[in-house]
Image (cartoon, rainbow, N blue to C red):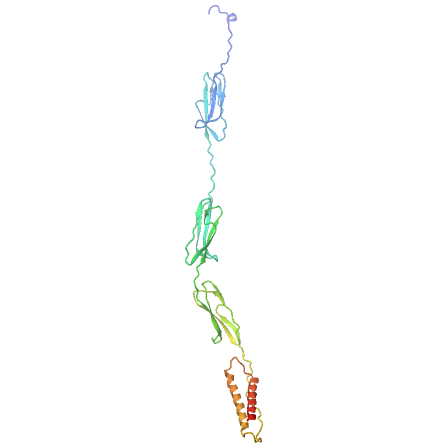
Length: 312
């Protein structure tokens, strides 16, 4: 350029910034699903941009794809994709709760007839129990739930059996004196094995109870049993008569109307009566012959004789 005059000919240039294209920041998971609203960054060409990370609940930042986290605005639109990974929170496992069911087999007196069983399983699972065949017994009832569900608390199922009746041996009850002589008729009691029996002493005339041998009360078994009530004889305090004095016989020797042997006849009659009564005494056990009875018999016989003589 010839003849240039800087003072006159110089131009003044003003720099004006040019807006750049937008930078779009996306927030997605590993499958590309949007997790948050896009963020649009604006700026002039040549200026620096920075894509900010966001806090997204349940996710953690993993990487930036399809663009840099930082860069410069240009005349071309840009996209920055922030990729997040889902946070896997371990779900706490519930503790396994086991239930227990006790199965018993007993008789009516709660005596064990078969071995007790124990069933275990998770609470909520089903359980099953069953009765057993036990020799000599028949099932009567079940206490508890035979088939059910295990619970956190323990459960019990009880099978109750009744004993089949079986005839037991006899129980003989005797009543004797100290020498074993029977004083009253023996009694025979019968029943099934395990049944109860009872006995009782008797009141026997002329005897006093002394002792008993054997079990007065008990149970019938498969073996014969004997219960013996023993008595002692009461003391005999009866007064035994001595020979009664012979009654005086009037002397009728001067009576010419009577035979000469009247006195001897009366004496013979009285003596015979006394002898007969005395003969009866040893043979009498329960009946007591008293002195009054003997005298009465003698007087009656004598009176009869006197009447007979008068008639003659």
